[in-house]
Amino acid sequence: MRDPLAPVIAALARPGRPSSDYDLNPGTLPPEGRVLRPAGVLVPFLATPGGVVLYLTKRSSHLRHHPGQIAFPGGKVDPDDDGPIGAALREAHEEIALDPANVEILGTMEPHETVTSFLVTPVIARIRAPFLPVPEAGEVEEVFTVPLEHVANPARFRVEGRRWRGTRRHYYVAPYGPYYIWGATARILRALADRMAP
Image (cartoon, rainbow, N blue to C red):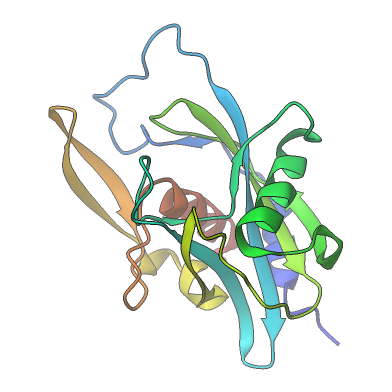
């Protein structure tokens, strides 16, 4: 029987390239002398009878940074973490109650540099068995799923822009129902979609 995640696994075997929030903004250069902080995010897929889905979170509207934005479970690498993979697993456990023992790491993608000076490693993973997500009350407002076919299709992405720190900044968006997927989350998913495209 064919592995439902075979297209994702095949995409990870193809060459990729690093991405950044500056990709669509060639006139905006990263600040000189910046120090990038390592981070890891989990990109967790689950095969269901209706197809493969991706788990995402909606951040709490009370947060100081990125309130209400759509994000992967994840965060900065702490000293006790086993690198970005360890950080991604720890944060997913804290944010949505996903047991690391229920996760199979499929691979990682090239790091993504954010305008907030994080170097984010996307950790692509399979959730082995269905679980009950529990949003971490202080940080996560909602946990939801998006079909793989939505985020794997480059045609679902478009470029939008808004003024940020005095200049117009462009970024990818991939809206799904009431969820406005944009910024670094959409850029990472677009990188995966490009690798999955035939």
